[in-house]
Image (cartoon, rainbow, N blue to C red; front, top):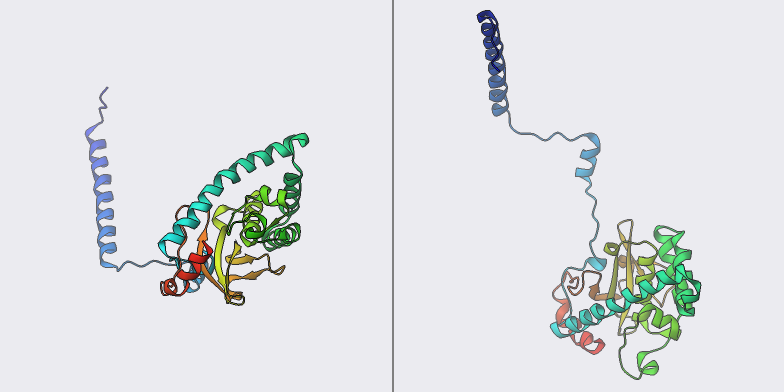
Length: 263
């Protein structure tokens, strides 16, 4: 269907269109002559002047201090452990649904998790740190299993009632996940403790931009910046098998022999 207009109407429309083109051309020419500027609102200006710095990993980890072999051994252990953790997560779900299916170990572990769910931030991390420190008896793997190093799953540790540092750390990691902490805010960290001259495992939980260190040797929560005696070797999270690496490559030569003994 065609639209027929009187010649005066066409003349009027042409004049309007000409004016629009003229205004648009002048605006473009003015914009081209003015240097580009980004104007910040007051709130944006404050952010630009004081950018928020959130460490992606505890101790500022960006490069591994471990030799290739110990790194591979630890990531393999951590990766293999994820299968057991996933199975135990399903068992805990069933435990919540059916009391008859709940083992004593699962019941004790879930009691800690459920108590922590009512907390947030530092209070939640502190409750889990204290509760698990008190629930597990410290015992070296050589005494418990007759071998130097065994990484237990949380319900295995709670069933045995005993474990060494990495067993505490693994249980805390999983408890925090079950209590609602994001995987992005959790790491299992292998460190060298200069105070006692041995390797050690802790859990790191990021709260309000700071990494809190959950340590079976301490009830008090400290940040990674407040634990200068702990020298990080490797951090593991749900991105395994890729480890988080450490910032200072010079640590490789210093800690690789210790890491080999640990793994």
